[in-house]
Length: 459
Image (cartoon, rainbow, N blue to C red; front, side, top):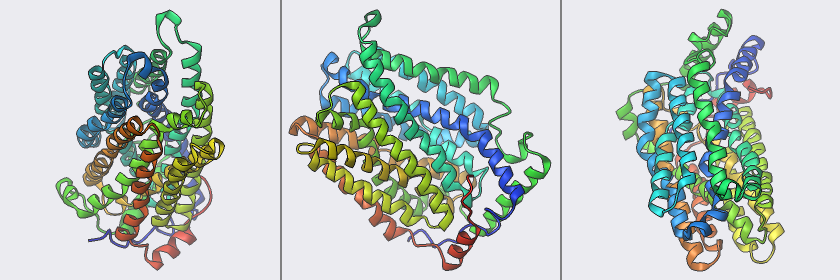
């Protein structure tokens, strides 16, 4: 059973009503900046281990395999707690859920500075996954309450570009902390990384719970910062979108048994395999290419993530404009996979070209991710979307455990990252194969509606 061919966006949804477009712009400016800031903090706290590794392994006498397991075990906790967290958001609302998640992951990040043994390392990384579980799929679900499908890819691309911003900020920041604060107060540079990058998340969680009751409104109907006319326009537009998409699954248990959910899991698993390898071993790959200064490594990774963020936004906008999803997800993933394989070949012989290939790999992989989330939204709604989005993200993110563990093992036993990169490239290349097998193109009528109804203005 393949994910069925779907009608695309209602003609009136985008670019046909200036008042409606103005209402959506107001929503975007109200919600997205703070959600993006939280995603930046989340991403920095999740992946700063890749930079801390440059000092941490030698200081604590950890092997590459220990690091790979510790980096990846985050996703086991993520897997176990993501569906319950997303269902909780459906019942208690976005603000309370996001505040809880942010406070706890910040505290866990700070606690990482006290790691001394592999067991302690594993426990804290596992707990970081437990605490952060639900944030990303929760935001994806939350945005479906506010935007119709015609606007969602560009909004998700904008939100998820925060991960690229985190890479641009986090790389140089971690490099500067590693080199500038090493030995201050008797602490190593990697300890300062966890302390200084965890505290902002704790503060953001406190701000969310105490000061943002009127910002993170649960639904458009409750948004007193929209005018009554804007609320009516948004509600009517969302209703039109739901009608255009046709019958969708609303039951939680039925969604978990839906074969289409598991097809989406397989697709996303391949994407996450490539992405997790790049974020957790990207700094090590740059180091292997001959760039040994932590600050230099940080700036190189920042440049790569900058291209990734640009790709996310532009690919999401073009996907909405053309009402096409499958190739806008599959083709960037294929480019990313080929570039990952090329990095493996170029590291020993051409460091400069290897860094260009690494930037292309990150840009291609990141560009595919926001468009992917359009696919399950075509057949899930309500509580089924809460459970289905979380299930897809949590199960597929088990690749985030496997990929770093395998990369660490192969790097330790071969002395190079190349073998691991080639294996990861095969998995990511399977993304486009699975998309072509399971996701049919939109109907011709739907494509015409999307093309005429889409407009290039920002969401």
